[in-house]
Image 1 (cartoon, rainbow, N blue to C red):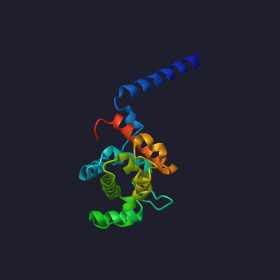
Image 2 (tube, helix red, strand yellow; image 1 turned 60 degrees about the horizontal axis):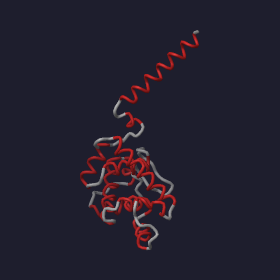
Image 3 (cartoon, rainbow, N blue to C red; image 1 turned 30 degrees about the vertical axis):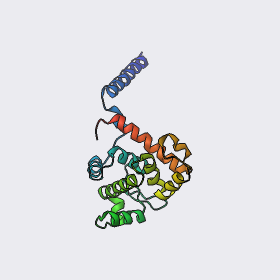
Image 4 (cartoon, rainbow, N blue to C red; image 1 turned 60 degrees about the vertical axis):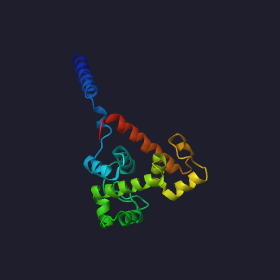
Length: 187
C-alpha cells in the first residue's frame, strides 16, 4: 500500500513538472540559452550582423565558455586565430588588445568576431552559407571551392563541402540558428 502511494505521488509530481514545463511559453530556452546577449546585441547592431547567427557561432565554437583555446590556437568565445585577430584590429582600426585579453574578455572577442563576420558577408555578397563556411575554413578555401565548382555556396548543398570539419560546422551553426529563431521571438 505504501509503495502504491509513493508511486502515485511521484507520478503526480512528474505530471506537474511536465505541465509547468509546457505551459511556460519559453521552456525551450532552458535547453538553448543564449549568454552575453547584451554584448551580442550591441555588436550585432554596430556591424549589422544577425544576432542569432553570432549566438549560433559562439554556441558551436565554445558553448558560451570564455577562455577557451583550441588545439590550433584559436582563442576566446568566437575562437579567433591570433593572426586573424591582429589583422581584424588593424583593418577595423580597433585599438590594440592583447591576445590574453581577447581570450578572457567576451565583449572584445565578440566585437572582433562580429566585425569579421561582417567582412566575410561583404566578401561573399551576403551569402550566409559561404560566410559560415569561411569563418571555419577561411575565405581563401571557400573562394576556391566556389570558383572550382566544388560547392555552389548554398545551404541545400552543404553536403558538397569537401572538408568534413567545415561541412559539419556549417550544419551545426544552421541547426542552432534555426533553434534560436524558433525559440526566441526577438533578440
